[in-house]
Amino acid sequence: MTQVDRKSAILSAALAVFSEKGIEATSIEDIRQRSQASVGSIYHHFGNKEGIAAALFAQGLDSYWQQIKANVAEAGNAEFAIHAIVSTHLNWIVEQPDMARFLFARRQAVSAEHDDAIRQRTASHFKEVFEKLKPWFKQGVLRRLPIELYGPLLLGPSQELARNWLGGRLGFSPLTAVDELSSAAWRTLATNPAHTGVSFGGRKT
Image 1 (tube, rainbow, N blue to C red):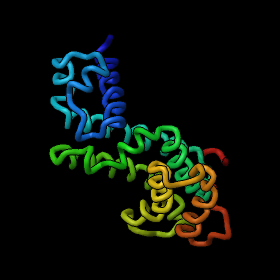
Image 2: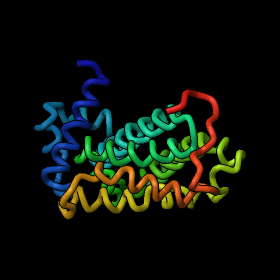
Image 3: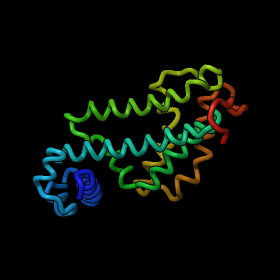
Image 4: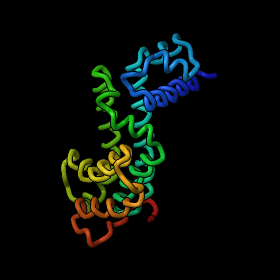
């Protein structure tokens, strides 16, 4: 097994055990048994349990944001870009519920020593998505708002719905609400919601 495969196996095992036992109750030995890795290998790659959790959190963030960026890049206009963000957000969560629960448990998952790095990683990903929307700001299609407002306005309701679904408090799939939630985000962020966003570059969807 290569070093990359070994690290991947350890992270996969950690996610499984975190999901079953909870982050605080999980021990290095639990992860070692599930991954079949040696204690030395675990410490070599990650240092300690906090290092494993931070690496797993970073892996989940990257997977989530890379999918969003890829789908936004395919959108031919602003309205479809907003829809792509909301749709990808909910689809990713439904497809990877254990990882989504782990990401939602940030306060327990990320220790203080790793928090700044994770915060910067998240901000960098979101800034890249924000950059993809800028042509529509310049065209006057999307409202010019501080970047700090775009996350809550885009995904706030979707986040709440996803939390309820992950917690077993929702009696239907979040995917059935994609159109409604993306339409709400569009109405909030568009300068003239009655008109579909102007196309630029790329292909139209």
